[in-house]
Image 1 (cartoon, rainbow, N blue to C red):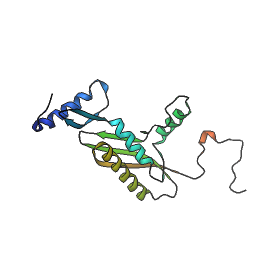
Image 2 (image 1 turned 90 degrees about the horizontal axis):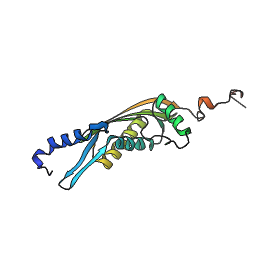
Image 3 (image 1 turned 180 degrees about the horizontal axis):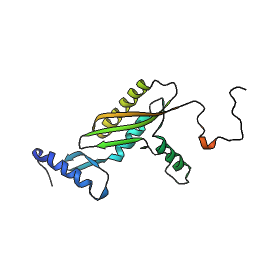
Length: 167
C-alpha cells in the first residue's frame, strides 16, 4: 500500500475519509511514509488548544454557561473525569489545517483584547508545534467576566447569611 508522491493528495483524502467511517472522530493524516501513517484525532487537537488557552494568565475558565454547568456537575461525581480539557473548545480538523473556536471567561481587570491576542498566540504555537497542523484561525468568544469573590457558586451561597458591603 505504498503510494507514489504524485498520488499522495488523493489517497490522503481517502485515508482520512475512511478513518471517519463507523462514527469515529475525524482524524488528520499527519505523516504518510512508506513505513506507515500517523493520524491525529480532532479530540487531541481540542485538548491541546484547551490546555494552551488555560495556560494564559487572565483566563479564568473555558466554556459557555451550559458547558460550565455540566463541568461543575461532572466534578462532583465520584469517579468522574473532573474538568474536561476540551470544554469550551470546538475544532475543525482537515488534512493539513485546523480552525479553532474558544469560549472563555476572563478575570476582571484583564485587558480583553490583549488577552485574546495572547490566547491566540499560545494556542496556535501549541497546536502547530505538537501536531504539525497549520492553524488558520482561532476565534475567541468572551462569555463572562469572573469577579473577585465570585468563587462560590450561586447554589452554594448560604441564604441565611446576610450580604454586607462593609464590616
